[in-house]
Amino acid sequence: MSTDYGDADTFLGVRLDRFARLRETVAGDYKATFGLVTVVLFVLAAVFAPELAPYDPMAQEYAIMQAPSLSSAHPLGTDSFGRDLLSRLMYGARVSLGVSLGAVTIGAVVGVSLGVVAGYFGGWVDDALMRFVDVLWAFPWLLVAIMLVAVFGQGVWNVVVAIAFAYIDDFARLARGEVLSIREEEFVLAAKNIGLGDVEIMTEEVLPNAVAPLIVQFTVLVARAILAESTLSFLGIGVKPTTPTWGALLGQGRSLIGQAWWISIIPGIAIVITVLGINLFGDALRDAFDVRGEEGAP
Amino acid sequence: MGIKRYVAKRTLQAIGVVYVVATAVFVAVRSVPGDPARLVLGGNAEPDELAAVRAELGLDQPIHVQYYRWMADLARGDLGDSIYTGQSVVTSIVNAAEPTLSIGLVGITIAILIAIPAGVVSATRRDQWEDYVATGVAFLGISMPSFWIGIVLLLTVGTAIPAIPSFGYASISEGVVPWLSHVILPATAVGLPYAGIITRMTRSSMLEVLSEDYMQTARAKGLPPRLVLFKHGLQNALMPVVTVAGILFALLLGGIVAVEMVFGVQGFGRLLIRSIERQDFPIVQGSVIVISIIFVFMNLVVDLLYMSINPKVKYGGGA
Image (cartoon, rainbow over all chains, first blue to last red; front, side, top):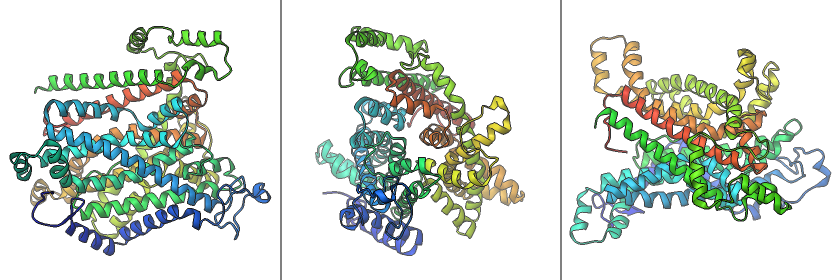
């Protein structure tokens, strides 16, 4: 049961007419179309990497190991171990996209919970939770990642946690702001009057009405998370160096930049196209869902 | 709330945040699975070596004594010594700071020089080709990792113009020209994504200001359009941009660390990465504290600055 503004039908708390508007935006705007198509293509390439990849991403060809090159057999070239770059990129997409989605999801769940509780109860609960969020914010994500790697060693989960950590405060602040404006609405007061519990009101009345800006935020942060993950992998403090992530591929190509520029450049292009696609789609979402402001920083 | 009380309150809050960060670092270091001393020395260390390192790190003391010492040292600005070089952590960080700050400051300057004109043009020529170009380029900017821009610059500008060195760093004490020629490529790599963000912010902020009543009034008074745009429009539009530009510097850090690796600059990023490789714990934990302090107080300064240039901002209330 969710009470909304008017009687409009909703999906995930977003009014259906907004999805209709999104469809119009995407169809009418080549930037948004490009964004959506790119995102879908990259997700498909990641999901079906085992079926689609022309080679085993770990298979080394000794013949071309000495002289990595672009050829018709390897359209995007090979790396210094003679491994097919296209296949490694496709497998890399699984890690890069998976880690980013996972990290932002965790950040969203924790951050939104904090923000909703803080905004709903107000008073000292709000003060305490938001000071806690301030502390989270004061840890630059890169340093959290570095601490985690220094303490626990490299691993996918450390990267996920480090990036998630960085986005908790973004979600908490946004959710809190939304809740502050929603909690005085009549339907919330009505729900209180008929005796609904706090948890029910928060999850069924308040949260569904704050979903639109959160979805936009989620999209923008997935784009940022891809950049963050690639930075960590590039620095060699991301997931294990043997895992082909985009950032790691790029980093490995750095020492060969004179002989084989594409090992560094092509994974970078994959990153740019994906992040650009998500950003453009996020912008279309922002327009369609009528969410204002915050341009966001990487 | 009076302004003095507000400043005092915010300062105390900032100190509180730093205190909690310091405590968190203390706990994190001590929750290392196994023995931090073994982490320092590696697997094959002798027991007496381990004991010596433990004593040096103060790990042989009871936990509350360790905590008290940690905080007392911190209050005196003592972050311990590097295990590897024996140099004090503060000295190591200060020595590595110049290249990093140079890249950051030049990067921000480049970002602002590109972004503010681009944002203004984009807003005043809304939905015309100038706007599309500026917005498109800005989107591209925020979608590129700095270190990749660095590699592209290295391959293109770096090879095309031999006068621009693509490796290392020259201190500003060796002269402005060598300094700038070393810094310009890494700074551009770091600055371009931020130019993208600031362009978009300037654009939306400017669009908002352009529709304000006082702009109408200024135009109606017959003031020259250029004066209206710059004096009344831009000045007001830049307010929100300024607050974010401050926070951006802290966010730049991630980009700078990676870009330093691309250009072989011996800055803070290199120090950090090398310290992780060497398991140099004091440097890593000291860096976390130092960066957090800079982060928190930078935000405080921006906050107070914003308040003093914008009389509309009320003290207290809101977050």
